[in-house]
Amino acid sequence: MSFCLRLADVRRQTLAAAALAILPSCASVPLHQGTSLSSYTDMAASGGSLTKAKLRVDPASVLNARTVRIMPTSAQLGNRGALDPKGLALVTNAMDRALCVGLSDRFQVVAANHPADLVVHATVTDIVPTNRTAAATSAVASLGASVALAVPIPRIPIGLGGLSVEAEAVGQDGAQKAAMLWSRGANMLTTRARVSTVGDAYSLSSAFGGDFSRMLVKGRDPFKGTPAMPSMQKIKASLGGDPKYDACKAFGSSPGITGAVAGQLGLPPGWSDKGAAASQ
Image (cartoon, rainbow, N blue to C red; front, side):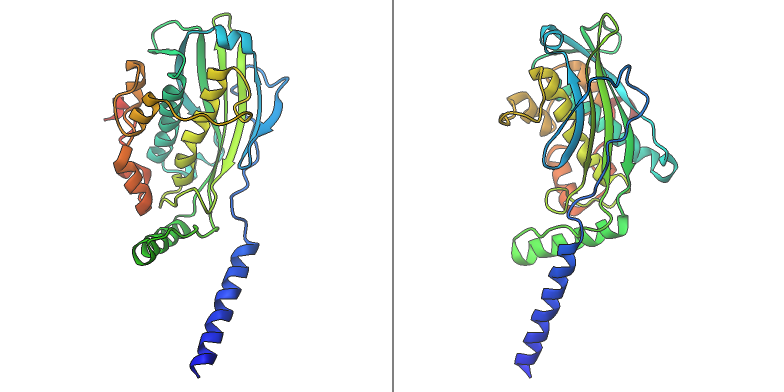
């Protein structure tokens, strides 16, 4: 009898694994073109294994620039009503924070009332909402497995969210010097489930900020070449320390270790991220 029960358990586990195997392991989020860029011409397809992108960059103009100003990220969303306004504000602010820290690697970031060689503005063009029930189930299962087995388990690949963004850098002459369309979906291995409709968009916002700022810092396609180690100023800011430039303080401090713990527990972004400095 025990052998039969064990055999039945094996069959159930095999069927469960087969069912998961046929489900998509990441959300598919197409590039969503909005209307915020001054130009959409001459953009080349790019991206990585998880990210879709189209971009253009004028290397000479970008590399000659020394100062940059960041306009607060806006949103052009057809499903805005389905999203928590406070959560959406955290997504756009987290994107600005990531842009500010990333651009600080080479540029001097100036405040909103100062002139700059480049003005950067991003717009969220699509958010695929995270299914809160599926995220809660994944978070509980992952936490239980971590306690019992001391190993992480993949997220349930159902109800994964995603993010689509467009952004540009404009010079003092008003001409576009760099632009990017960007989209990415959450995946079952590296995107922690958060119980929020914008949970995955929030987690992915820093990935966009990193890709776009790297394009301006290097003056080239950020998806090509060998990834570099993060700078000390990035590490400090990611742990909740003061950013390199005072202008970045407008976007608040990173949740740091508290945010990492909140992510592990599947808590909504607002549990640990206090948002922009003006809203605190």
